[in-house]
Image 1 (tube, one colour):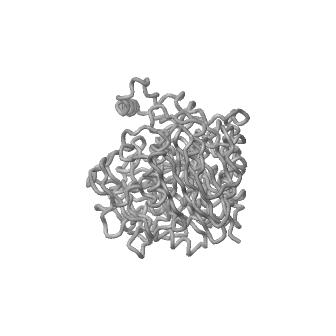
Image 2 (image 1 turned 135 degrees about the vertical axis):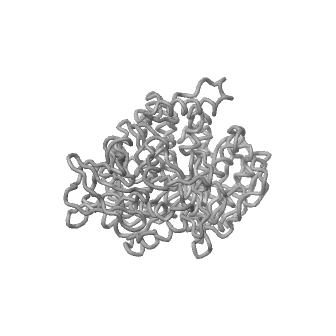
Image 3 (image 1 turned 90 degrees about the vertical axis):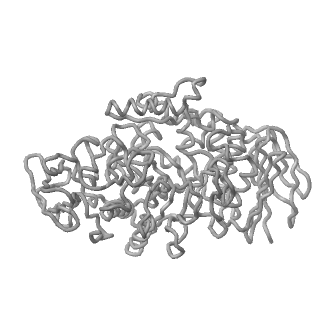
Length: 611
């Protein structure tokens, strides 16, 4: 691998302190390479490891350019901006020209992250970074500490979830491009919000994917759901690995991103002596040492393998945290959701209690769906290394009709599910709109230009939901109406029951942030009691100064539970069934040890402070 400087991006087109453009392209099999401007062709010089380079004063910021590789006109695979989309020329962009004003910003401790996952195109009517910026005060008032932005790497057209990106360094043009992203992050930091960016290193999208014309970016060694696997361990892989390491460092260093959420890392195929994730975490540690800035790596992984989040010196990959889908699955089944597909492996409230205690539901047990023993122990893993939720983009958008919890569960159950997330010893995440019981769905949408690909996507979507035709046809992913229907409706904020739900979430998040026993991610100071017959659960958490008891009733009738003994009477902190939240009844302010009736579909939280 060619030497990598963690302090500066070196691939693509970059501008040095003298204003000269430094051009570097990896094309190991090329016989000749030029960079093509409006009226001239500039030859590049062959260097070691398959790179072609040039330093010139002929290229200026905002110039549009192509690479000419053996007489083939191609966009820059490390382009920072694609002003005309995935099939157009690349835009020269000076990433260091932005006037940052966030010098005093310090990343929020990971244990204090309260995530808000959002999709730029559908979060606001505007569908841009500027649109997000205009709603930052709303998110701050809600109590959010970190926004998590779904992928923004350039994808075909203007409508896409983002997982079909084909320019990992280029910021989606229709969202506001790289300068718009820098402006948003600067504003977030000045308002006290951390920024998490969703990145995809397990595959590339199909349209506008020209990587193979430059070098061996892909390998046939492994099958994937998306075609050829990215080449992390086959011949020529060194510079492919460097490409993605440079991408990680760029987001942290040049865009001031605070954390990366790394999509489906279980689908990254790398059987080399040092896994690419381990190498990435090592380089991020070097960057942190050099800059003094803290950055986090958060993995989405469905392998229930703590190796991904274990330190490198313990033979792990060094990720700081991971998403926990199994908490979501157990919670949904407990709440009365359907048990088909991957939900068949979950048995309701006993599994929810299991997840509270172990994060993974499967941590060494036999899985009927997988037909094997699955998962590893999490005994020594801190609660801040797990991210939990009652909804996310996948769990909503991968339904045929994109129904949110607001369509699937009662108002009381929605409140209970939110409470179940917030009282966990893990990091809570909201999916955009859930805090006001958003009625609009979040559907799957694309805006490809390749007609054959459009047909294939439509066909695949219909086949996926062939068993659901009684519920109608799957919405057309290519139709603009599908995208428009997925946008949040900001007009409901002064309407009921949305206004009450928003107030409820604010209060619940405030409780999480300010009650010591709930704020701490200490998994050891916790006990869980479950009654499967009554569908109730008692979660108790404590610190040296406070103890809280959380009483959860997922049944649709009153249920009696036994209040455990304490040093004194318990005082009520929170009551989801109270009239203040449009609930049916208010529970007592003070309770003692003994039997207590819990209202249906509700959560009660009581506390004791120690003298």
